[in-house]
Image (cartoon, rainbow, N blue to C red; front, side):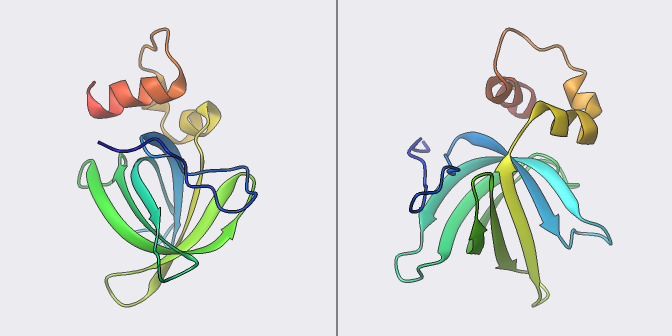
Length: 136
């Protein structure tokens, strides 16, 4: 079971909280254009011997092969009030940059209109995503 303790470095106001849905933007994507998806952060912890590195695990709801879990060691390039910019190694030896940010309804409406067309019960966005993405 994931702990809900947020990882917030220094005085940053944006934290990464396990069991929370975030927007994920990745450059380059899997094809010739940027990739974006909703992710459920499952685990986050700083790498003890590498000051600017985090180990994260997450559920990628938009992965083309179906919903899939990923584990990555990422290097934090920037941590702002609204997002985290990180870099990680690609399978082919290159690098990818990812931006993890708060997930907003408007972002979901633009990128996933079919998801947002689903009937929403009396629940917040996080509960709604947990229900429809994981079949809860």
